[in-house]
Length: 501
Image 1 (cartoon, rainbow, N blue to C red):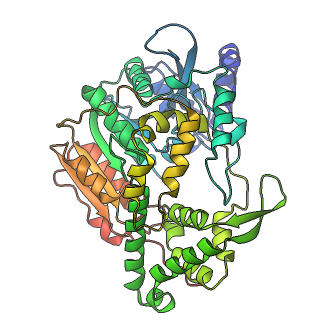
Image 2 (image 1 turned 120 degrees about the horizontal axis):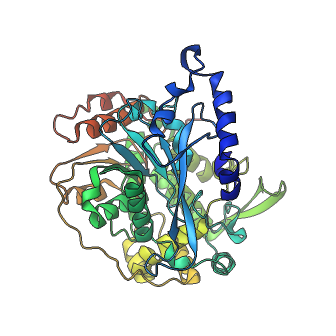
Image 3 (image 1 turned 180 degrees about the vertical axis):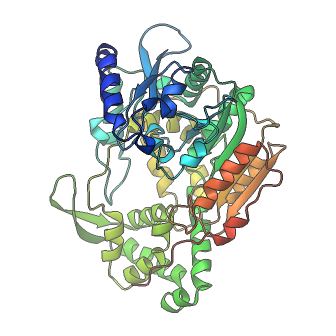
């Protein structure tokens, strides 16, 4: 696709590509017409410094471009990198010059990959009714000089996720050509601000999910005049210290899941004591780890894995992130307590290869900006009495020691009070960002509403009537205020059912 071509080919064959695009799209133009000018991108191209482009999986032309910035912004010299931008234009021509940006979290996910949700036929097409959707991959992510490395190319399956030797090898691989200290949140936000000015938008409507909320909160503190509204979903706080609260929040999310199971007669009948099942499994694995066999989808070979207490606990914690997996946890615990780890392995060992992630970006943000501010004593105290214990913290702290970047000198950031309207969503089962984070965030906004989904994990995926969530955001952004916001449709949002067999 066009985004994968080199800059040279794009510039050289741009006219050819546009002609081919026009011919290809003529056959599927709305209402059978061959007049491609009816597509919003052609009108939007007259007001934005971007080019007509095609995206895989998208049936209409969009607008694409790249902004070159210095890798070392402070120096203003040396190596330059390109930050990619894709715009799904407003359906109404955008007479108010409004624009939505988002960060989907991680930091590892591609914003640009979400284009098909907003384009013609997508689930969120309605969201670009009165505004442009501007998707930007921050520096170091998928379409902006991505920091991939061979040492961490494949996900780790039922084993330590961030082994320090492989993290160190990843760093050594990348730092031959790249200044890893320059891939910070603050530099990425400055890139976004340059893009806002380049595209000519007065303000953004901003959305952040998980880490993306920390990103957008930081953006607001750095450029308060550039954000019109702020939507924060399952949010990390601005001065997030990953993974200090993971164990505690994981326990709270698990306790809420158990409470929901025991309030469901069918679940309670089959799994009368999931907490005791958890304790029994962890105790048994502490005494004698279990060896299982998996089919590694990357090698195609059968491989042995040792399920230790810590590997099991971490895997359950990860399962709590997703609604469709969380509701399987009572069943998996019961079976494991009976000595059968087959359901556990089936849920945690992928059957097919998964896409590689730009892990170099992840460590270059998380280590100096979040993990660097905690130590094992803090983590041990914070995780006391939880099923996860200090294992997750140890994994991060030792991996970040191997990554080797010092604390970010401009963090933590002093928080302030804002007039910017803000809408905050949290999930009561969330093992990463419990509602108390949402409560902390609301203290820094004058016009704000915090909505807690009582049966949700780290998102609303898998819920019946999930579109309610997006419609509430759309109404909020359209109004620019939380006043009189209708959230009655939440009553019809239902989580996935518990697994019984």
